[in-house]
Amino acid sequence: TEATLSVVGPDGEIVAEIPTRDARGVNRVVWNLRHTTDNQPQGQSPRGPLVIPGEYTVRLEVGETISEQPLEVREDPRLDLDPLVRAQWTRDLLDLGELATQASEGAESMQERLEAVEEEMGTEGDEFEQATDLLRQWRELSFRTRRLQGEVEGWVGPLTQQQTSQRSFYLEMLETLRRETGVLSAAFQKPQGGSRS
Image 1 (cartoon, rainbow, N blue to C red):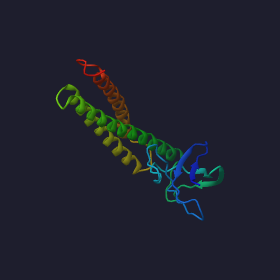
Image 2: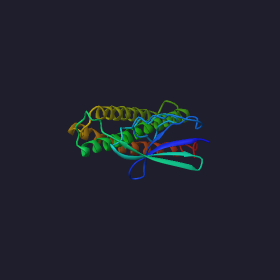
Image 3: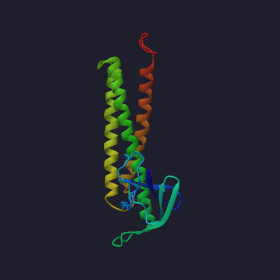
Image 4: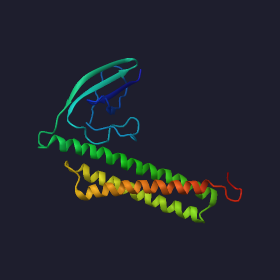
């Protein structure tokens, strides 16, 4: 029977899903103390930010059998951090990870739209040019959000004023690109000369 191993936070939310192999016999599993991300491929270790120190529950499910054990995550004793600052840092990283995921998904979706435009209308015309430009902007947003996420993860502390401004700008850019992509999609789906319906 397939086994699933997860880590549950104090509020009952699953913060990490840990890949397991064969459930038979004695097994050792290592958790890297990171959150599981929404777009994490199956079978890979969590790759989100480090969890906040505190009390957690490890839950093992095999078929209909559920076994739970408490687990305490402690802060690195070499770090002298305000717990509130540490918690906010993790929340900021989770928010930035979600933003980066949305930007990446937007770029992938725009790539598919561009291919559809090219197949339907060729590389000439306003639709193809607009789709190409939007794809470039989506990719740039994806790159910049990932870079900001990496910068924030490299140092435990509150966002700098510049990082806060960048995050706000990227959120605005995300909404702008979604709007423009929606307008392009609507224009592409309009029938032209009876060739599309």
